[in-house]
Image: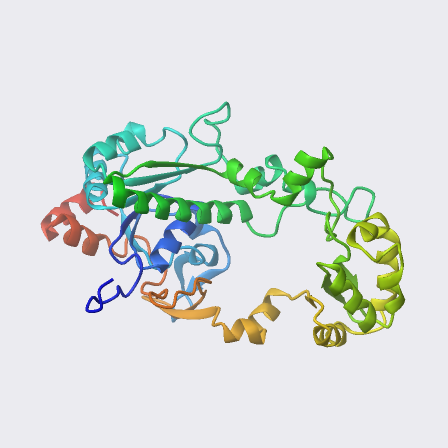
Length: 415
């Protein structure tokens, strides 16, 4: 960049995104792009809109305590977007979406494989209109393979992708059995992979002049994110099992009971273990041949864990955290969600924000974790009401007159 050239206010302020997705994975990707400055146009069906608008309670209430039509779930993944309500099962609606796609850089959709072809809104049709379009398809199982026709949901994918087989207490223990993660983690990870892939395709377009089709499957993401557990299987030929909160590759690395609850002890190397032993008044453990190395501790896991539990019960969680932090031993409490937002570090990092909703006034949201020094995230639009920006967007981008929009509304093409 030349010295006299000004930097963009936001990294993606020159990018336009058409978001045809619903629920979580696709909207999460679109929200990430919107946070980075992209203009995101969310296309919703008239009447009900995004499925998650109705996924409550709780719901957002207006200043008089009446429901606004947005659930808390919907609010988590739809800020920095403009909502237009278009019925693209009808020819006029399809034409509106095609005209918008011709003017956009990115399109995100999560319909079943091949589902948009019947409306002429598939990649082949739209790339013919706009060869620079980056078209991201998010599905449960991808564009090919024996499961391509199936619908995919996060809970299903957590099971099929192996995550549930390694989550939860072991069989035979209280509460034993497979367990899903407490949020739709595969959806969120897929959204993050989608935004990464979109940014890569946009960068490639700078060199080729062409957009491309991105095929992202929840199952693929679930398998990819097994990380060390999949490598443990591929290299060790042992199928990973559920271990509760224990770690398959390092000890001690789990929750331990305290005088007033539980704490997490996350020892990652022998030095940290030695410091823990010193802080706990058990320096001799670090010299014991059963525990002096991580490999030895793995071999004697049950014995060591029981010994540590007897010691951790002698102090409160807060006392242990204060003590172990002084010895540079990774540890921490197990916070409730309320305690998370009361945590001084979370507050210092500004992870709770407020935005102005057209009917509810100031509404709370969770901030983006992305910190850029030159082109920071900004919060421009609260999660929109259904069709809130239909007139503004279609007038600005397509030049539709008030009379045209009124006719479309009367015919049901626009909500």
